Image (cartoon, rainbow, N blue to C red):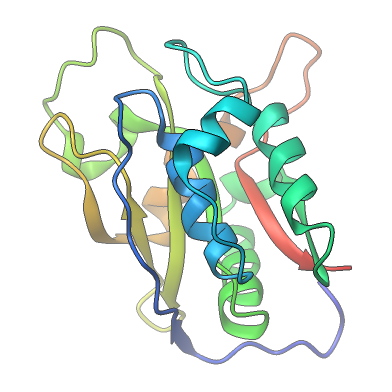
Amino acid sequence: MPAGSTSPTRAKLPIKGVFQATDYWCAPAAAEISLRTLGIKVGQATLAKKMRTTKDGTSAEDMLRVLNAYSKKTRYAYAPAWDVYNAKRLGERIAYSVGVLRRAVPVQLFIDRLPWYRGVDFGATDVGHFVVAYGYDKEAKTILVWDPNPFAGGGGKYVITMAQLAKATESTERNESGHRYWGMLQPVRK
């Protein structure tokens, strides 16, 4: 994030929240919401096809590739962020994208670690999911997210603490090479 890019204490973007059309289209739905904040309107069915989404979901790499293909004619690009397991860093990144750039942020996490899904059986632990951060309050240390999953009793807007969201991100885990997984696909100015 550029020096001197101080974000306001709190901010909230006007978004059009959409729900995923299938139980495995969270990435296309999150991408649709985020791209709209760049002025790009594309539906999740088109995004799912371009992201090669299957019943196993969407890889973060395919989501990043498609987000950047759509955003290439704008002044913005999406960059993976692996350091958002740290609540302070997660808050800084979201505050920059939302408060300074005015862009919504797809956040990659484990659905069963979100507080509104406590007690829901997903058939496995650490099931990947995407939500969209579109607001924050630095003093309260909270993030406003849109969860596109209308299944399993969830979906819609939620306020979550920065610490809870950081703990839920996939960046808390390391891959077989020892590198952290991405936890956020952050819109940044080119």
